[in-house]
Image (cartoon, rainbow, N blue to C red; front, side, top):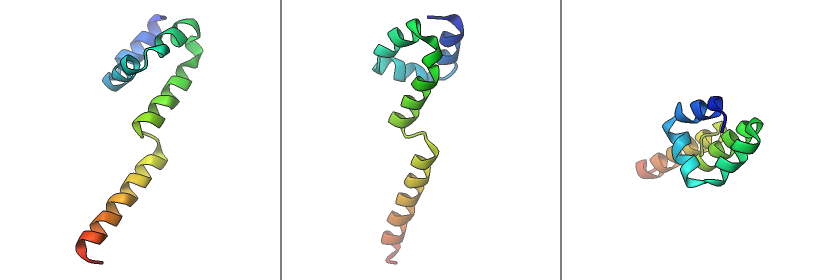
Amino acid sequence: MRSDIVSFINSNEDYLKFLKERPYWYKILSIEPYKINEFKEEYKLVRRKRFIDKVEDTSNLLTIIQALMGD
């Protein structure tokens, strides 16, 4: 794997854990390092790191708080 890709992955501990959970990315990134953006997108999707996921989580939390307060 290219050193810049390794540096990128090592810069974020969660990327490293994600890579260990999905070892097929080792092969993909070794052969096609330009797919690093696809790796990041899958990471965001699985880990719920996208903006829309954060909005949804906040909305769900507000709904729970409203229900606990008795509306």
